[in-house]
Image (cartoon, rainbow, N blue to C red; front, side, top):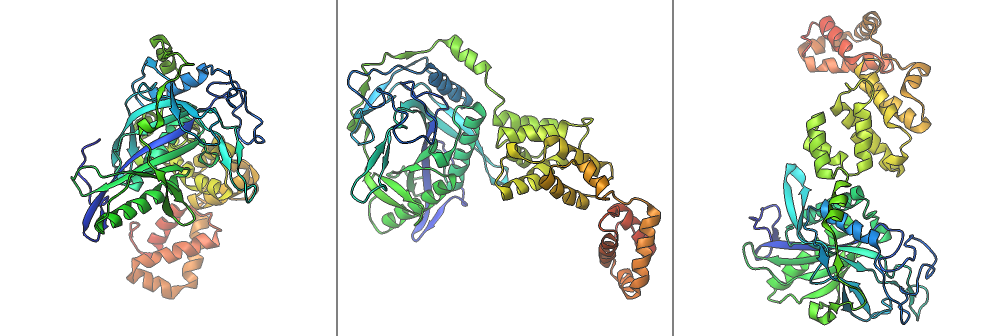
Length: 498
């Protein structure tokens, strides 16, 4: 666990003093693979219940598991992306428990000898602060089926389509100290997995979900008793669950009670956690090596081959965008959140003659484009405005063909129609007016119509802005604002800075 002095902002104020929350997460990430971990059954999401179940998944007598090599490689790739130790020898164990959606009566998992050891994830927080969260381990295991309780008033049903799907359980160290840090950690972890292509990160489909371990203590005191909140499937819910659970524990302790180690569920409707069962310990599961599976032995040459195939990961891409394009840490962090967004940005910034203003390009991608995509519920891959088109719009602003204000109007038209910006400028008559004679005439007309305001502007130069607005209005926003300001300052006898 990191030794960190608690920050005042992270401490929770109780009735009897300050408390520190200690957080560790176990993230279950479904491995992106067409087949399951020990069978060839399909993993496609959304199929009719019990249509993607092999004899192995249904645990029929005599059926033996056969490991999916591709899933192993995906787990190794993830470990490398987490800058973690890859263990060349790992062991599959049986984790015994009985539940209707677990047909074998045990889950094949890894216990003492996981495939991936210690690693680290660096999370970016508000104010430019970064925190390193330690990874304890990553192990592979098979998923259980799914119990369905809402098809009838007196019966439950079991769908085994998910039974046997390959999971990576990524266990963090208890290094997080606030719900903000936990949300940032899951967001970053999801980004890394998506860059690697090892998990699609679709939390609404259940392919990424988290068990959240929460405890509280007085600052500097020993660790408190933790409670585990199971299967939280949204980043927003993770934050809400932590905040409620920490408060619940503080209230119990301040009233003289004790925290009971247990497993809890988060109810998003009421925004609270509730008890599910007393927490099992490892010995309760009676782990032992699976007799049907030999130890998994990797060859270093294969690990090196996988390492050589890794894409540029978010931290490396962020550092490169900052050095190559001069972007701020904030802009670079936003742009590398999805690899497709970073690719789109680079296509905008690098296009044309390679001299586009990288900050202006970033502003358009993270501002107007993101805003439009969010309103319409589109991903950047489905953007109606291509990177080439947005780059051309940036060029038209840079060379003075259009003003920034007109550019927003043109962008809206591009988004709705898919037309190129140059075509919109010409056909809709939106070229910026830079003719000083035409601008001067417009200014003279406004001055002549408002002699009282001219006198006021000479007394209070800030009122010159009113004249600028009137001129822009009379020219339908097409006058070059810089030229307007310069001529207006001269006409009103003001300095151009004022």
